[in-house]
Length: 137
Image (cartoon, rainbow, N blue to C red):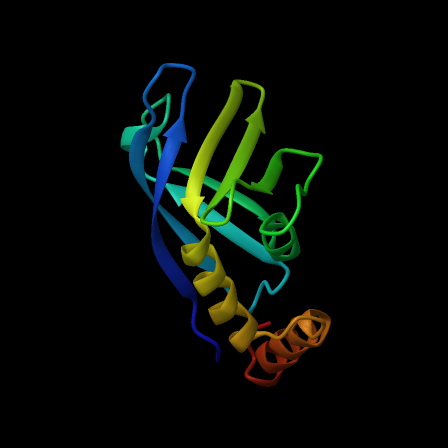
C-alpha cells in the first residue's frame, strides 16, 4: 500500500493590517485519493478554535505555481519567484496565505513520485481492486 505524504509548511496569513502572521499548516497527499490535496490548519489559527481542513485538486496547486488558477473556493497564484499565494473562500470570508514556492514544489514532487500525473485514474481502480482482493471492500 502507498503511504500518506505529509509536509509541514510555514504559511503567512495575510491580513488587511500592516502585518501578516506566521502560522503552521500541513499539506497532505494520499495515493488512495490521487486527485486531491488537503491542507490542514491547527485550531489556534481558526476563527472558531477548531482544526480546519481544505481539500482541492492537486492539479490546481501545480497550475497555481505558474499562473493564477481556480475560480471556486480555493485559488492559487504565484507571488514573485519565491512565494505562492492561496485564497480560501467560505461563507465566513476569505483567508489569504502565502507559502514558500520551494515548499510547495517539494511537496508536489513527492506526490508525483507516488502517483505520476496522468495515472491518477489507474490508481483509483488499483486501490479498489486491492481492497476487493483482500476482502476490505
